[in-house]
Length: 311
Image (cartoon, rainbow, N blue to C red; front, side):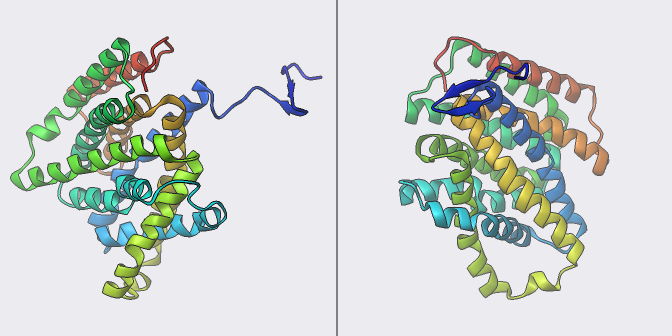
């Protein structure tokens, strides 16, 4: 017998690990934030330094993830998820969300997305959780959220303050993306059978939504683009973001609740800022570092185990 304590339940040996534990939920939230942190950088690189546009990136992303998860959804079906709920989930984090955000990233720097979309999603998710599900934040979690929003504002102060008129138009797109993301966060918690099932619904539904009109409109355009550019987006957007990160995020929301699970989006600005400095030469200043530190403190406070019943 090893030193790891094993329990027998119904004849099944278990090592104590559970996907439904709070620790697993936090680990999944951290993993999703790290993967998503690179999303705006990879997307902007694809839009600004290759021949790809927002429609191309969206179709690549969901065709790859949709084909990967189609067999799973074919076997499991909708599992009681209504068509309305499925449509909200697809719009929330699927092709419509991706298209809105990609159009914004084509007009504004990564820093602005990293500040506006995750922070607005946190606020929208908390509000929708309270209104739709009756899940209210505890006082401690409310203070943590306030610290997070203050930190996000500090981190993006320079970027938002220096925005041009053209870039201001992207803010509406980023805010829309945050609202859509929050809708998915709440609806998936209420209706999805599991994190993997929610991921499959979004990916396959998005593929069905965007691939036919793209083929009718642009035909074989993707086959005419450089293979290397398409593969980068296919591997990162289609596998890492749309399958792995979405599964991890959905699991964190399922275990921790939509309001608390949404707080992991606060790590996206940190990851995006570091990667933008490395790949795009956008160097953060002292004010940005102070804001990111405040955001981290707010997350730690909001996620610290307590007796509250929030989200």
